Length: 322
Image (cartoon, rainbow, N blue to C red; front, side, top):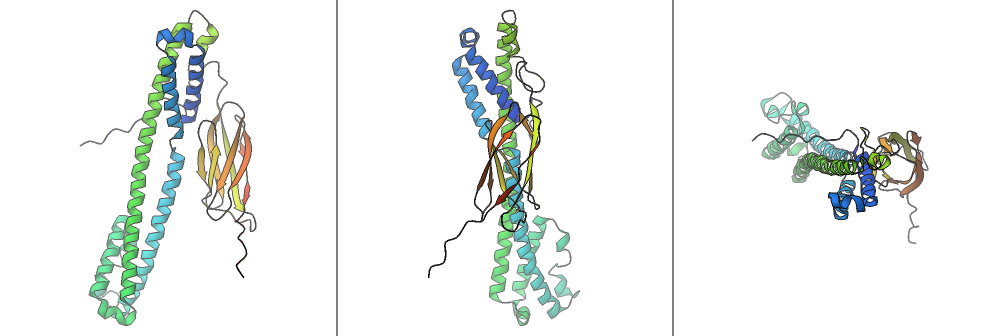
C-alpha cells in the first residue's frame, strides 16, 4: 500500500494569522447578516465556522509537540544510559573471566554495540543479558548476582518501553500535524467562500464593505491593519544561584491561542515569528517542576522584538517537625 501523500497548507501565512482572519470574516458576516443571509451566509454557518476556529485554536501546535518529543527523547536517552552502565559492569566481568578478544567474550558483542542505532542497541542489550544469565556461574566471582541480572533486565525493559513511547510520540506528532493542516485548510476554504459571497454582494454597493472581504496575500482583509511578526525571547534563571534553568515551559497566553516554548540548556527561550496585528496585552507563564510558577504581563507590539527575563524561586518548605 502506498503511503498517503503529506497534506500541504492551502494558505501561505501562519495558522495564527488564519485564526485572526477567520475571526474578522465572522465579525463582518455577522455585521452584514441581513444582506448576506439570503446569499447563504447565515448566522448558523458563521457559528459553525467559529466552532471550527475554536477547535483549531485549541489544537497543540508543533512547538508543543516538539517539546514533548524532546522530553520523550531525553527519557529514552536516560534509560539507555542506565543500560550502558550495566553493560560496562558485565563487560568488566567478562573481560576478567574470559579475557578480551576471546571467543566467549566476543559472543557478548560488546565491541560493536556503541555503533548501533537505538533500536538495534536495545536488542543487543537483551542479548548481553541473556549471555550473562547463561554464564552466571562463571561470572559470579566478579560480582554477578541474581540482583544484578534482575536490575539489568529491568533497565533493558525500561529502555525498550522508553524507545517505544518516543516512536509513538513521533507518530502522534505526524498525525496531529496532518490533522491540523487539514482543519486549517477546511477553515480557509470556508473563509474564501464567505469572502467570495461578500465581494459579489458588495461589488457595486459599497467599496469599503467589498474590501472587508478581500483577502490579501498576508492573510488580512484589505481593511485590516497589516500583520507584523515579532519575537519574544529571554532567559529563565534560579533566583538564588542565577544558574540557567533548563526545560522551563514558557506559555504566552494569546487571544488566538497559546504559544508554548521550552528553555534550552542555557536557560534561553525564543518565541519567534508571532503574528501581531495590534498591540496585545498577554500573560507569560513560566513553569518548572521544583519551582514556583511565575507569571509576567507584557504587551506584544507588531514588528517590535522584546526580551523578557525571569528569576524563578524554589518553593519555601515548612520547617521540619521537632
